[in-house]
Image (tube, rainbow, N blue to C red; front, side, top):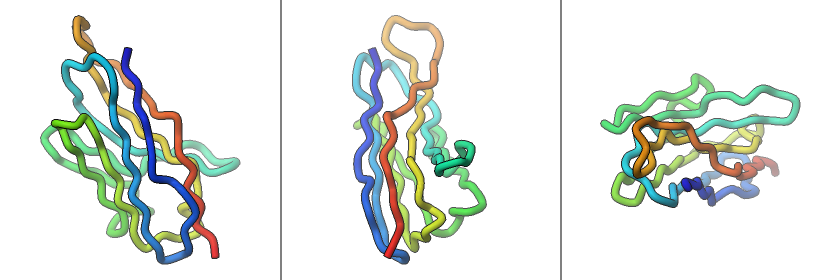
Length: 121
């Protein structure tokens, strides 16, 4: 059983910063890609950032230069540092990981429960 546990969301003023965390718990053999996605009310879920097992990162156009994704492989955790936040960054943020559990031959995608980020004055 694998579970992703997110933390770090909240209310922040425009121009402020937040750091999200997502930790994978359970019987894990390996984790490939990790990523963050977000969904605002009335909109489709969109890519925020991804990071490969080798550390290569990719960002959505709207967050480039402001957000930074990182990972701690020893802790099975990914982080999203969000700076210069804008009201349009308001959304529920979800983490996703491609996980190979122990005693399984293939990877599966797992999602976190989501954490609310609200940017408002």
